[in-house]
Image (tube, rainbow, N blue to C red; front, side, top):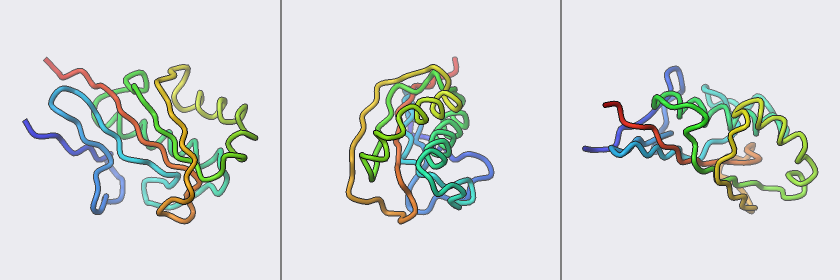
Length: 134
């Protein structure tokens, strides 16, 4: 069985990539999400605002595949500014819990020189497991 492309309803088309790929075994690979909304517009210009949007985007992909926040098993964060991340850890935790609750999967944080979209301050990719329907 081939993977199923996951694209949340109402989102602008993904051109040249997929937001999510659901494998036959229930593994969901969520492509790197950035802080733009469903129309590919950056509403927030600050780190916390973009981070909340990124997590909401990830959750939207997981939900479109039939899952929920608790199904996320891994998050890999790519941030452009380590100092900004470290300076806002308390706000990051609060924003994270607003979107994903108290579910804390395996996580990695990688500091990168830049991201493809100039306005993006961070990008997060995820892996989830959505139990196949019997």
